[in-house]
Image (tube, rainbow over the protein chains, first blue to last red):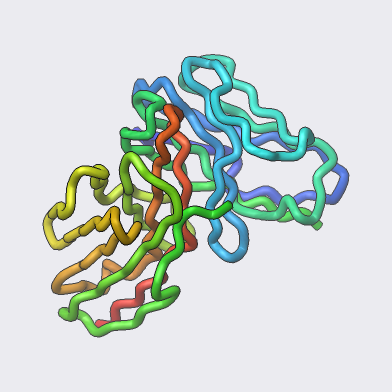
Length: 114
Length: 112
């Protein structure tokens, strides 16, 4: 009965590869987010979708492409992986997109690019 | 630009003591939230304080907000070893999106 789940939990890959991370929430929320946390624990928003519509798109290389097939899913595809992409990627969801709501986080996907 | 800065970056105390963490931010906010992150886990929401509130309590947690100084503090009373974690403040700006800007966090170690 996990609220926000991500797969895979760990991802080790070579530079130049393309990889995807999947996120699913069963909370009935309408808004989902992708965050990146670097080695210094800086947590920064990358994207947000509300009802499958992109509402936040931070300055992120266009090698990163989010896709929301429905309100319960938000996937992140990364092309041509670089060393600097190594980080922990967190998915989150909330009911509403106004920022007044609690965001529920997934357990994170630890990406290591070699 | 990063909105929140937290102080101290690391804090080590004995079980039973109180822990105080501070957060400063730069622009006007709608609300400020505190989250906890246990090692290797995702963030868990602790408490939200609105810009028109000055203090809020939740169990052993007490949060204050001073909008004139653009700062907030999180006090954990009677700390326990299980409180060992990183604590982040996050601010929501005046825009209408759910964009939260996180501070760099305070790593708290509570020794049994």
